Image (tube, rainbow, N blue to C red; front, top):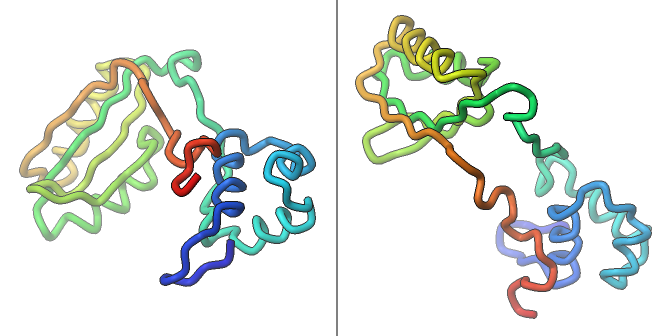
Length: 160
C-alpha cells in the first residue's frame, strides 16, 4: 500500500482497504483469510500507511441515541479578515463534527450536531455576533441514507 503520487494501489491493497473501511475492528487473521495475504504483510502495509493513507481510526455514532436530535450542514461566507479566525473557531467548537473549506460563493461547510434546533440557532447567532458572516445557508439532515461507504465493499472494487 505504499504509494507515491503516481502509483496506484493494486487489487489486494484495495481489498485490504475495503475490509478496513467496512469493519475496522476485523481481526487481521480473518482479513488475511478473505484477501489471501499473510497477516504479517497486512500488518506491515497498514502500519506503513498510518497517518498517510489511513488518517484516523474512528467509530460512526447514532447521535440521536445520544440525545443530539438536530444535525445540519451549514454553509457560511465570511469577510476575508475573519476567515482564519472563523476557521480556528470552527475546528475547535464542540458542536462541529466536520468542517470543510468549500467554493461557489461560500468559505466553509460545517456539519453541526446539536441537542435541539434552538441550540443550532444559538450557534449561528454566535457565529454572526463574533464574525462578519456575509451569507449562510443551512440544510437539516433528516436521515442518513448512506454514510462512509465509499471503497467499503471488496466485491465491488474497480477492476474486479
